Image (cartoon, one colour):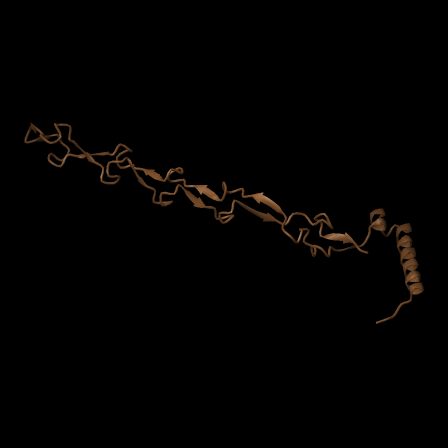
Length: 170
């Protein structure tokens, strides 16, 4: 490695300046290039532009306080029974007359002639709804994006380079 004295450094600096002015005067570089300062990688963020220490809390954009509402039950933990239309009473074809309302030309004694037999819905046990199978009756799910924390700490912008990742070389 060459050991340069301060005088030698000064002479090299003057020569570099003269060379750049020569290029500018003969139109080989632009005004922007003439006044451009050499950039170095920011030592604080290593060129990422982010503060190395997370400091800024941001709420999750995908949930509310770490949870998502269940779409199946709309958050109440109960799924509506579609077999009985939420009435708790199932209407089925009559077992006696097979839904015709008559047996051998006479009105069916079980359904009264309308061919429909009403009974407690076996699907929801007469309640009109049942425990939601999607969320296990909780009405919500833990958010996959934030892991149920409701947000997270972000690194924010590097204070030394203002997010550019570069600084003017010293």
